[in-house]
Length: 633
Image 1 (cartoon, rainbow, N blue to C red):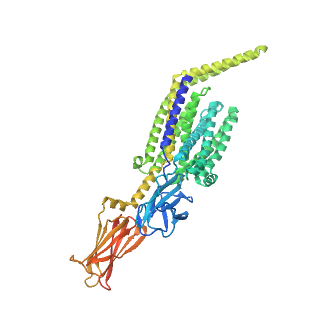
Image 2: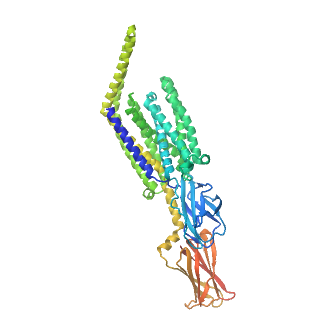
Image 3: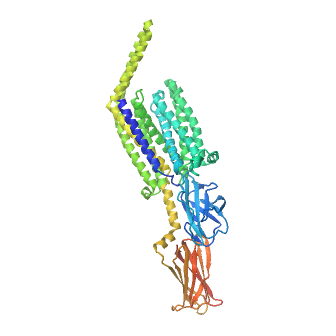
């Protein structure tokens, strides 16, 4: 039976790993967890005067390097000077050379968000008038390429190693203490430790290139590695390595001195190992919580311990499930019914904790029901919820098989001591015969081996055990895919952040959108005025065409209350964008004819709600200023 099942197991595992690799490959570059919500100058605007600096605003704080912000002229030459600096809050700036000539400039940025993920992008603005540019920004991505794929694979393997290490050790210590002496179980837990350690070292080496150039050649750059060690993510990875050293000591005790102790001594040591193991496992989980999603955003002080509990619940459930699978398929020692029942109870408690912490995390990362379907994070979360529901359904079937198997295990365990006594009796009688003692001992060992093989065949032929094996194997298969989806989810921009960024961008470009929907029609403003002197009342009309960012034609008409053209000596116009503290931009139109003034190529640098102030002078001493707001794109 074992020989026919093992190839199927291997084939299924290979297929599941291939599916997970496909998920990780198609995930692409890590999505930005800090989104660009604003800039000055804004994207696509035409300013009449070159700025002294360029500033960018993100949805959360980011980490800067010397090359994080760059400004390139139309020929691709860098025109920024000095290092990037923090303007205030989540806004960062870079100085540019004075007296920039007219043309289109490209701003590129590559920063690291507060939750450790790289963010890159680019946009353009123009001085004076737009021009052609030789700068290409299509290849500016963060966390992509070979290094990005390797980093995603390292993250997946680190999660897998953590789950197997923590869950396997918890299964042995809390459910099946006899498993401490079982070689396959020892290899499983030690394999989890080696996987997590290797993956952590890989992530530490890749980190500098992953958040920077993305070049494979920079992986072993010691300067980059030194910079990584000074970051929050680097500190988390180093802390994880130190905790893994403590975990190695825990493993050596669990599979060494612990297995050799008597039952009385083992109970005392169990308590100490449980406390120490919990502390180490919580510390390992905290190495993720303190550097990623949970460490930033809403209620970070609550989110981090919740994230630790969530990770521990996942490890206890899925890692214990893996250990149970090894015990059912690879172990020659029979697993007691009490051990299976204890794990069933532990798994149930883990699922409850997983659901409770998952609901809080979902609310924190999404913020609204629409984010479930309207954001990539929400869509992936729906897939994860579906997989968890499927896993719980299969686990329910496993519990039924466990209940049916319990009686079989009890009967097998009752018969085992009788066979041991028979073997011991045969061994003892052989020793009493002097010269035949060696032969008797050899026969006893052969008999014991045959009995063990017979018991194993009996166990494998048991339909209840076979059913439990299949259901547990199915659980493990779903768990592998679930882990892959979770890994991609941790690299995806949270739905709340994505929606907040969309709202901020929509607010900053609302006037631009309004202008686009209205086509190229002119904006007309009518304002009544009274200068206070004799014959000082009238109406001034201001037209902007096409009322959008860049050059506009402006016409000013002044009429008497009866609609006839009003011959006055002077008219002045000033534009102010109070929301951005731009202006007043003074405009002195040319007189065309009686009551008609005009100005061509009036530059409006930015979309927004502009205040249009018109000063009308009807005599040498009588004048007034009237104003009205206009949405100009």
